[in-house]
Length: 534
Ligand code: HEM
Image (cartoon, rainbow, N blue to C red; front, side):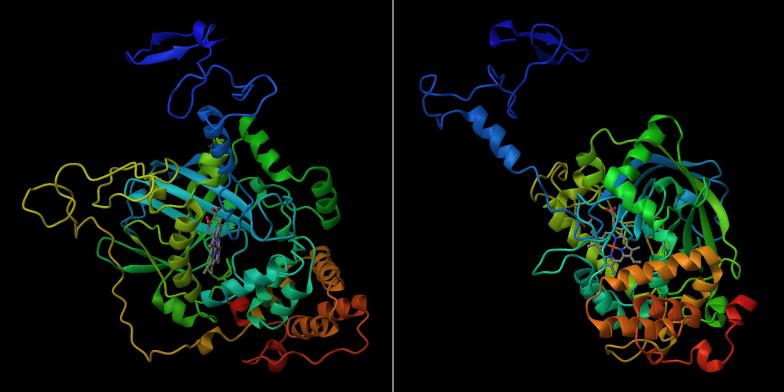
């Protein structure tokens, strides 16, 4: 159609539309100006130079030039879907969070699954941790449970996060390799960071190569608190259990799938949801009090430890159903901004030093990545409940205070007011101690739960862990790094250490790594972890 064929039609609401001949709308510039010719730039003569005057061409190219935003500094490759969370029954006894007050209550949700180390264009089946980030649009604001598919983490203090991620991602001089091939930097860091051993057992297991996003568990990792109407606290761990069960692929399958279809996981989720096979997870909670926390063998603030489900059986409190793919990947999956500090009244943090650091990091990273303090104005990040505040201006402001008052208190009876009754309240924990860079002695046992995980695996799965460690370490060029890892394995399981050392052709078995607290080896009680006996 040319401009001459266009006419103005009125829509249902009386608004004017430009329509081309036929039923398609007229192509316009971003300013709404109708475009005559989108195939040829404006030239002097058919073969002449292109003019600067061609505002349509300039706008089109300039906009294209700015299409990319920085990828996430971690978890760059991800795939999201919409759905809802349905509460099974009231949890008012434990929490005043509105989402848990009424049985059958449905809360809109958006979930983004991701790999951690690979770039945005990397392959889906890399051996890696998977992000499992859930945004719940509650009636009291957005609640983000920003978790992973593994219940523990590599490090105990957020100050180590940049080092962990630098070591895991591409090396600064070569810019390779990525997640699925091992390299000296990563294993060097791990070998010097014994607290990572429990997580390493999980990462070398089949858990790190899921068959599908639909067959994955999710974990909030940290201990949080629930607070009821009387501000009484119950500690809580969040777990997502897939209704389809847990399934992984073997490493040789993962390598082939990555080669044949690097989009395997996202295609699987897209196909399932479009076919009406909506994946579903149950939200389960491990609830416990201060007395349990004090009696437990490990520090419940240590994110390298879990609370075994045999010791503290989780209770199911609701289900998450994913039933709709985003209309636009960029607008929704790429621009969604998860933040651990987004919690509703009735949910609170613990002093886990990894969580405390995350609560700082995510706001900072969203402002950097999305380019404006107004990233909550994007529809995917905006609350779906009423919200009012005096924030104003900034880049791309879509919302500004209405009326005269943009502050409070004011004499104009305008604008919102805080509410001690409805608002977020922190648990009034009493804190005292020297101001110092410390790590608690209660965080010092790095091997018992690593061993517990290893012995919980069946012989085939144990074989996969040994094979994964052998494969990864065989890519490490520096002998001392291989030896250091084996010296840690000796504190976990002799058989595993022996298999890996043999397969790597180590000439002599290294000594077990120093353990800051007695390990099971030192105690001579290799089969009777007290947490398993409970
Ligand atoms: C992104 C989980 C530790 C900083 C993410 C995402 C997940 C996640 C799932 C992707 C969110 C999305 O899909 O958009 C976790 C878990 C951790 C952990 C489970 C430990 C238990 C940390 C720590 C820091 C950190 C310690 C920093 C101190 C970040 C940053 C992003 C991110 C900067 C990128 C966010 C974005 O640009 O959207 N994390 N993370 N994470 N995480 Fe973490």
